Length: 463
Image 1 (tube, rainbow, N blue to C red):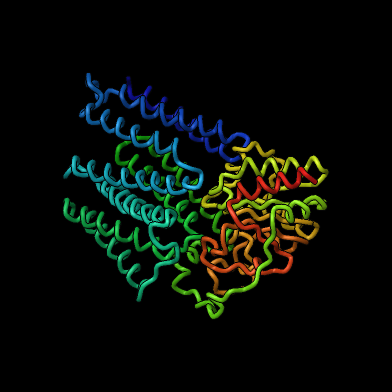
Image 2 (cartoon, rainbow, N blue to C red):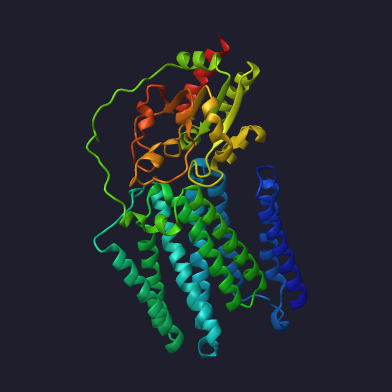
């Protein structure tokens, strides 16, 4: 295969990636967009095996190792993707993203070693950039995985002089990067990789659990930039296109998520160092709450005219999306106006609730984004909060210094009645109390969300 044909096929794959991103911008076309993206990735991988550089009869060296690596990836990746639960999807995304950044850094290092003294200054600069950002993405993604998987604390990890240590590490990374460009050599490059891995860890540790999805998106953008830079090193137009698309889309998504959380990106990353201590005098005190039974909930719903369902991570944990769809259909059959209030960062990643409800074939016109549904809570008879906490916590508007202060929320506190489905009184992912639980108009229904909703459906049918 000639270089011209190879580049044309690469261009076709790049167009497939662009169409995939377009498809992923809307729930109705997301599945098709995903398939188009998978086709583009498969085409980009396959064409490499048929490209003969400079007329050689064998296009690839070490073909056995390459096929073996692909086989190992298939053996690990396919079962992991098929068996992963929706609640663990963000962790999987974080791992895949980290592996991508680490792979780009390793490829850049190997190519640098192969070129040796023949490497141009531009190639060395791009290699340094790829190693730094790729290693930061790798180690940072591992920390985000551990936070989401609760293998470590989800709270911000801060330490004495933390800001200065992070700044000193960054300066060291940049200094060693300049050393690599001017002096060349394997030793400074390996030192650069080690320092970059350390900086990736320090970079993510101060981020609290509620902000981890934003960091995952940012690290995803980092990985895209490393792929684009490695495309320059490897003289691959396709890698440049694919990496630029990932970097640009990841950057846009990060900005949108930060806006949805009501804070700057800098505040998300380093706000823990300047956050004011919270008043914890009431911590551990037992406070009265109003709990109810499925029959109580069914009676309340039966006389409602408008109900808004607010899904959260607990809904995903209980896999109750089909049951909540059954409840919604039953209420609609009784003439009740039903909508789903969707917060942009509900769950553990953007679109988490949309995907979950799509599994239950919830009509798209019943889904209402935060800006659309908030003005209607004043006319809502019942708000049903299923496994959500931080995204409805009034502390975001009333308690300066708390981890979620300034984050736009679903204002369910304006509804006439609030039903909270919770397993326990445990705080949300941000680790702060929700005063809404103690509101006189709030009724708590304790237990597994799916089991509780099933009982509510049965009780409502009997009325």
